[in-house]
Structure formats: structure tokens, C-alpha cells
Length: 374
Ligand SMILES: Cc1cc2nc3c(=O)[nH]c(=O)nc-3n(C[C@H](O)[C@H](O)[C@H](O)COP(=O)(O)OP(=O)(O)OC[C@H]3O[C@@H](n4cnc5c(N)ncnc54)[C@H](O)[C@@H]3O)c2cc1C
Image 1 (cartoon, protein in one colour):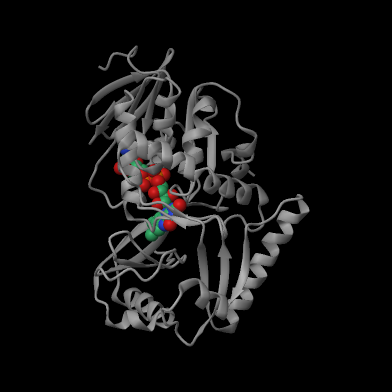
Image 2: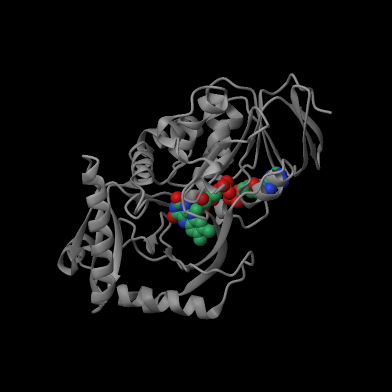
């Protein structure tokens, strides 16, 4: 049995969500234990695309658009501090991000979507930070690289960008430990019981007693919340992507579906498939991704693909985050959302004071679990 006086809070799940929140908690002075069941699973935190992205987030929900924009705008300060504390260069590039369109139909659909989001922002006296660009503008943005004939334009944001997501995760975990947090990797939580003042966690590494818990376990939150008699409405969406061999730098900013990484590989993304919880890659998906990439940059036809993988996006039924206290279980919290790369800055800065008993931040007041109880 762990000494229950040792920790103020246990964060269950050490992916991008758990690590950002656990880091914020230790930064606030709390004694924090973070546990993760394995370091080998191909979870979203290790298999994502690395975009720090706001321009496509929150159509029909200005609150979520605003939240995503705020997260992106705070990313420079967040990673500046993180890089200094961790000594790790996270390869952040902000200031340009493009959703590229092929053909007229894609362009008109994208134009419509951006117009809608701009209008929603204007209704609140705000400005949506992206605009439509045509083929000529895209050519100007990418310089001399030849574009495919079908490239018709896209939407451009001057605040979006990308990062190395594996280094982000590594840096957050490193600083968490450096600041006094305890991380047990290979510790699966198998039971949760509230007895007296404390939560009694049954884990693969023994029992843990702690007064406050945070469920940040991705899809693992579903069985954990079921132990507390609650349902979590999450939906899995498979995303497969490709990685090429390293090539000379030719693209200095990310597209939503294609980006060149710090080491020169090209990441080509990504499918959106509803195939349940399986994460197998398929040749047909790989072919589709490769063909589209070549339509964008014909020069890529000479570049070899060296890796492909798939993982599951953690989506709620309405696509918006869930940050909530768990009814009837005081001092317990559940956190689940897509876009945990982009939102890492706010997960670290915004959620900890609320989790430690402070006021729920206004900007997340609508992201409650109860909205699904109709
Ligand atoms: C293909 C793809 C591309 C993406 N691209 C982007 C992008 O460009 N930008 C962006 O912002 N987001 C992107 N995402 C989304 C982002 O990766 C996820 O939002 C994020 O990784 C979710 O992190 P998480 O910590 O909530 O969940 P996970 O990554 O699933 O981590 C949960 C952790 O909890 C642990 N766990 C589970 N059950 C237990 C238990 N019982 N006990 C202990 N530990 C447990 C697991 O081992 C795991 O490590 C992408 C996702 C995918 C799949």
C-alpha cells in the first residue's frame, strides 16, 4: 500500500493529456503521481501528426474555436518554458498552416466552411484567424517547388503550425519528474473505490491511496469511469499515415495533410475511418494517401515511403472536449478530447487550479459530461 500522505493527486494516463495536466499540477506545487499502463502501446499520443492547429476547429461552436485559438496563441510561451526546463528542442514552427484543396469542389466546400466560421466569429465581435488563398497564393507560399495541376487553393492561417509530438511528450514527462512528480510507467489501474477520504486504486503495481484522482487515460477512461457507474461517450476514428525517407528541405510550414519534419521525412496524412477499435494499416489507404500527396507535389513520386502506421482518434460524440468532475465522487475528474497536441498549452495552464479545488475556468464551462445526458 502506498503511503496516502505522499501524494495530493494521482493522474491516471501518461499520454499527452495526462502529462500536460500532471506537469501543470506539479508546477502549482501539488505532490503528483502519474501512472501509465504501458509504454509500448501505439496510442494517439505517440502516433499523431504533430499539428498545432486551430483553423478547422469548432465550426458551429465558437466556444471551441476560441479555445483552440487560445491554445495555439499560448504555445510559444508554453514551449519556450518547456524547452528551457527540459533542454529539449521541440521543433515548434508557428505562423503558417495551410489546408490545401484539389479541384473546384474541395475549394468551394472549404470556402463555405471558412465563411461560416468567420461569420460565427463576427457575431461575437471576434475575428477567425484564417482566410482563403488561391493557387497563385499557394505557389507564392511554397516558393519554387512545383505544384500539381489540380491544386486549386486552400485556407491559410497565420497562427497555426506544427511540432515534434514525441519530443513534446518526452519534454513534458521530463520536466514533470524534474519538478518532483513521480511517474510509474507500466502501472495499470484495475479498480477504483472511494473509501473514507481517499480513493483506493487497485493497480498492477499494488494499491495506491490518494485523496484526488484525474482520469486522463484516453479510451482507457471508458472502463475506469464504468467502475464509478458512469458512461463515457467516446468514438474511435482510425487515422493512417505515411512517412517517407528523408529528403532535402522543401517545405518550411505544414499543410494539414502533409508536412516535412525536422529530420527531412515527409509525413503524409491521414485517413478518417470508422472501423471500431482496430488499428491495422491497409495498402488501399496507403495508396490513396500517396496518390493525393503526388497530386499536390508531383516531385514526391520519386520519394520512397519507409513507414506507415494507424492509431485511433479519441473523439466525443459531438467532437467537443469533456473536462468534468465526476458526480457523487468528490475530487475526481475526467478529461477526454481530440487535439491534445494543440491543446497541451491550455491543459497545462488552465486545468490544474480547477482540479486542485479552484473555480472551473469560464472558457471550459460548457465542456461537461452531463451534456450527453438527455
Ligand atoms: C492519426 C492521428 C493524428 C493526430 N494528429 C493530431 C494533430 O496533428 N494535432 C493534435 O492536436 N492532435 C492530433 N491527434 C490527436 C492526439 O494525438 C490525441 O488527442 C492525444 O494523443 C490524446 O492523448 P490522451 O493522453 O488523451 O490519450 P492516449 O494517447 O490514448 O493516452 C492515454 C494513456 O493512458 C494509458 N492508460 C489507459 N488505460 C489505463 C489504465 N487503466 N491505467 C493506467 N494507464 C492507462 C495508456 O497507456 C495511454 O498511454 C491525432 C490523433 C491521431 C490518431
